[in-house]
Amino acid sequence: IDAFRVYLNGKLRRADVKMLLMSHQAKEALRKAQHKQQVLERRMEDVGKKLKKDLYDFQEEHTDMEQRHENEYTELQNEVREKTHELMNKQRNMTAQIKAMMREEDQFMESKITEVRNKIRASKPPEHIVNGLPTGVRDVAESPDAASSGWWASFLSRGSPSKKSDTAVGQSDTKVHDATLSDTKVHDPSGR
Image (cartoon, rainbow, N blue to C red):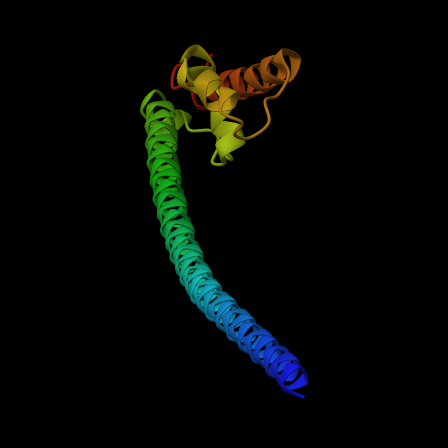
């Protein structure tokens, strides 16, 4: 009986030791598992923070990009508007200059026509004035005084009234000359 008691006590002690060892191993495994869990949680937290930071940076960059694009678009729109106004002002100025030049040219041509008309009238004595002397622009231009001056050629070169042919001008000169001669014969005081 004593031997059996000793045997049982030894077996119980070995079982206790084994239980203690298993308990220690279980505690160690639990500690390691908890440590791994903590490490994993910290890592996940760090990853989450990094993802949040990356997302925030991306949103911030996207917002900055949108603002930059909006500013560039507004600047471009203002530049286009300024250029359009500048071109319109230039066009208005050019139109005004062209109108002024056309007015000056018209005044110049009117003065030349008046000058030629006055020369034609001044070159004939009052008693030799032929009825129906040239009064229009074309009639004045076809007169001998106009043909002998250079202003009518420059007038035609600028695209003003159509130029008659040399034959037509010559015929007009002959008509005026004949009319002048016949009128002279009629009103010649000497009776020739």
